[in-house]
Amino acid sequence: MKRQGQALSLKNLTKSNVWDIQENDVFRLWAQAERDADLRDNERHYIDVIKSAFTIEEVNIDKPEVIKKYEARGCQVGQVRLDEGTTVKWALKKKPIQRVTDLTWENIHHVSAQKLIEVLERNFGGGWESLPQSVQDIILSGFDISTTTLPTARLKKPGGLYEKKVADGFEVLEISKGSWTEAIFAKEKPMASVSHTKFPMPDEMAEEENVLVNLDDDDEDMPEETKNTDEEDDDDFDEDKLTEESYRTTFDTNPEELEMQADEVGEEEDF
Image (cartoon, rainbow, N blue to C red; front, side):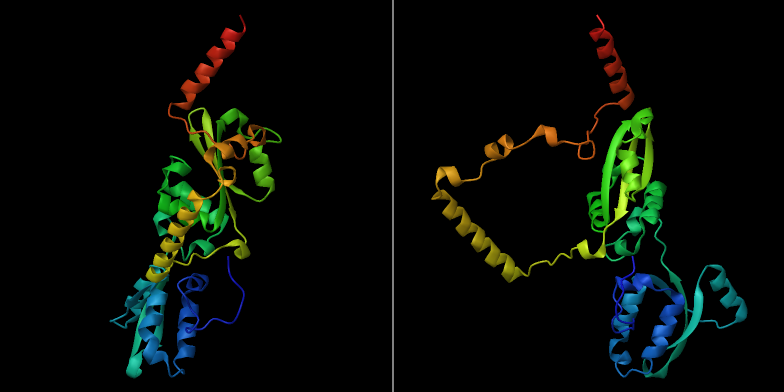
């Protein structure tokens, strides 16, 4: 998911958009910045940003056979000039995203839905709920995710959720659970809908706590009929609005046992 905008340089390179570039781009941007007077003052910052998406190894032995070994590992070797005119060679390699633990708040918006499905398939077989909450939060910041668990024979029935999601552009990961299957649907969120969380400063948190205290005090004087209660929310709940997409059941028992129980109930109804 690449963002369009002004041309990249070391000055506007961040730990997010650095995932959009490749090894040769790093050397190109650095060469451009060598003519800039502020490179020396910000050199450490630029290197830290690059290291968030690339591994950097300094090539201490500049021999062809050594360079070939780096290149065989997938590195690109190039020359950069550091502060005070020191020239060194770097072996750069883009960090791979292969495991769910490789997903971060910075790179999740630069991963395709197909790539995400590959990462999920490679890392676990227990379903969406088996992922750590922190990983789920990262994925949900960049993707629309929904799941369903159905008997395998019913999963792809015509007109069902599976067919609708695929038609809507979702990528799907199917996880077999005996005679049942969990389907995880993933679709990239438009960049315009991605929200960025701003964490409040300590003084802002204190001010917010004072406001909450005042609101609680005001609620005591509020007329009974104007207070929002859980009971009122329950009365407004409409079970008819549930759809297959929004409904998800967590099974505490083996799905095959539940299917056997359902068959037994059907046999009893025949009498």
